[in-house]
Length: 326
Image (cartoon, rainbow, N blue to C red; front, side, top):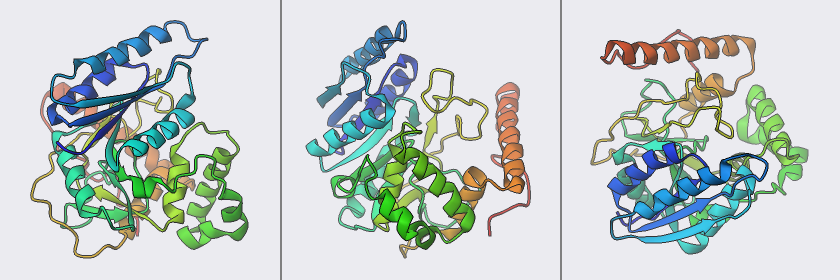
């Protein structure tokens, strides 16, 4: 595979090894590895960081390896953002995986083809491997366009990342001018993302990705989301930085094979119905949707448990409720 892969690791050699094996099968000709350093006040973390980095030495295919390893702990926000800055100083485009994002083999082909197809289309900012529609097929094509930049396995270009601002210096202007109302329209969406961006801006949330989402919105950019889920987050556990709740519907979502040749959309138009569903399932704070979300989480969690116990696959993601985004 010609497209460079950027691999972000930290202190979880078990998940790092699984994702590395998926990368090994794809055999990229260039691998860029970004690693955070251990926290001095966490016993044993230095050994775990070392073990994760040792896995990279198993590269046994023809590949140029570039590493950006931090001796000290930068944290999620600064390590990922500085790491991506470094990645795009070295390459024009990349497929990006973290140490807990396990891709289907066809994820790499999906990203590589679309990186080429939309390379010079400034409307497209992100190609994601995630689908959180849970069985709802939104189009007859193999992917659709969204405002949401799901980042558990994704790809982008230098020409898009150049706009990223980790410090969110434009936030006060966005806030004072009411631009979120122009972007989102829906008051519940505006309230949710206003609070989220404000907390991120104030440093109450240590993450890089909300700044990236805001960047994409301010560029009026779209994300490409597949109609099948191509990447599963296998890192929900007590050792995770943010993904601690292993019972959430987003943990260990099954991955599926993407068929080729890809069926491309005829028009580049955001799928509003899919985005409304995503908002209501993941971000809506109204009581009705909180209850619906909790029921959905529990149903999918126990359905996965039943599948593993009885040894066969029930029909995926049957509708729990007739509640549907309109």
